[in-house]
Amino acid sequence: MLIPELPHYKIGAKFSAVIEFADKTQLKLAGRLLRIEGNKAIGALSEPIDFKRINEEQRQLKLKFPAYKPH
Image (tube, rainbow, N blue to C red):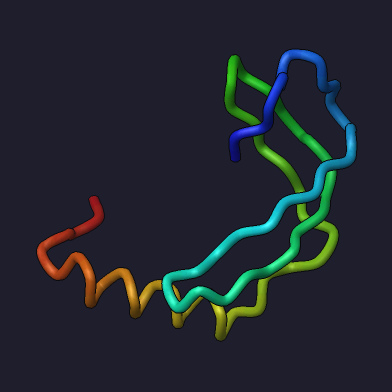
């Protein structure tokens, strides 16, 4: 995730974000920061993203990028 002014945040700080999926559906996320490295962060979500939502996004990505094969 990209967070403005990330160096000013501390491990354990709360964050919130909105992600937009390929079908334009938006989902609000919230959680706490677990690790910060430079301008990148890893966070733990307070509530999980629904598994059906993740599968649908993967299906959309496979349709959009059929030649992509993960390693």
